[in-house]
Length: 272
Image 1 (cartoon, helix red, strand yellow):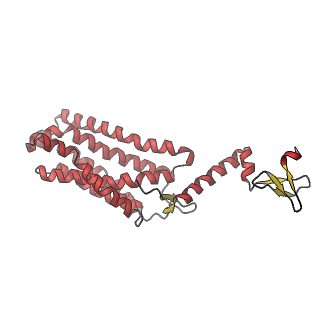
Image 2 (cartoon, rainbow, N blue to C red; image 1 turned 90 degrees about the horizontal axis):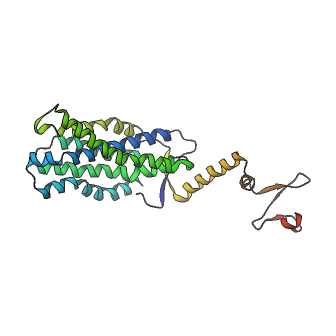
Image 3 (tube, helix red, strand yellow; image 1 turned 30 degrees about the horizontal axis):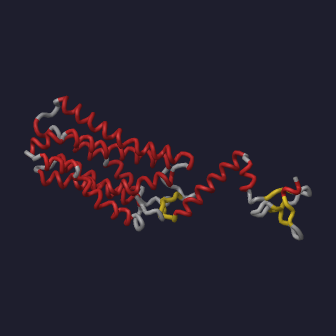
């Protein structure tokens, strides 16, 4: 989502949000946003009946979020090079939360169409910026696991949207045209605490932009550190490519696998 020449890096010594906390928050947000998708899919028939919509209008309403999503994604990707990523995510999700609540309070086709379009604008900030943040914060051996935890909440959230809406519909707690509105209102409100927290953390100095090479160097250092701790043969070569001689001195090995001496080069193979 963010350009290939950019990535996000966690400062080695700067305090900030714990990586696991970030993962839990983003996974929860992912779940809630797709919960809304399941709810709108369940209630399209009720909305069509209440607003007397044609099949074309109903179909347009179902996919309206894509218009806002496609329009806002490159904008947020560009702004991410200038503003704090958590601030942009919180800002976009504020738009999303307001739009979902407004879905429940819509009065006719035009207002609900606008609300559903704005949900796509809000999702764009999160979809563009959250995955690079998770990738940068995840421990190198667990990157795939963390990304799978994040993305599994798409189908899970969608399925729970159907479940929640269906259970609410069958309960008969609220009848009439207002019944389908309640889930949208509560879903939009449910995200507010997380939005407030992201705004609070939007000055976190441990989030910074760096080029891709710097990010890869960090991963390489972590991998080297793990190899040294494991005591593998690779750790011996990583340790500045030094070997001990019989007299206790340290002799470097050059790239072709030879000992460097002051007066001559001695092949390793000739010493074996």
